[in-house]
Length: 124
Image (tube, rainbow, N blue to C red; front, side, top):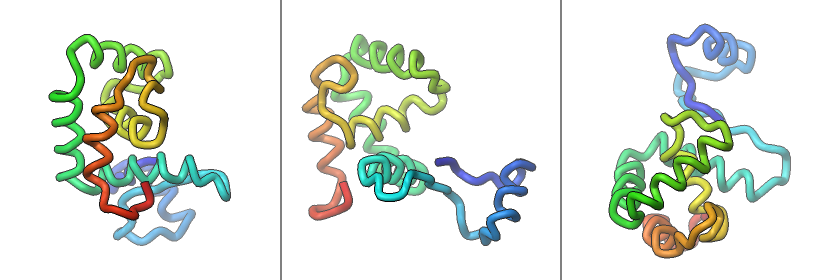
């Protein structure tokens, strides 16, 4: 999944090859029928397209995690080869779609706070 750039040559070529209109700003790709991955990737789309949600993610990251927990999550995502600029986005997607101990610590309270930002009955 990725945000489509209007200036990146590879993105422009991709847009043309797939006949994607300019209104398409974000691309999600998963294996057919992989509902778990679709939910994870939808979290990335929401993070990119929904500024109030992005603000909520930042608030939960800052308020619900200790500095030590944030450092551990950052180290975890770095080991998975995620670029630092993607850490918050990846953190929220894993937090929403995985068990609270996915990062090797109990982040149940952070998961609960972030989950509260999803409407009842939503795809989450």
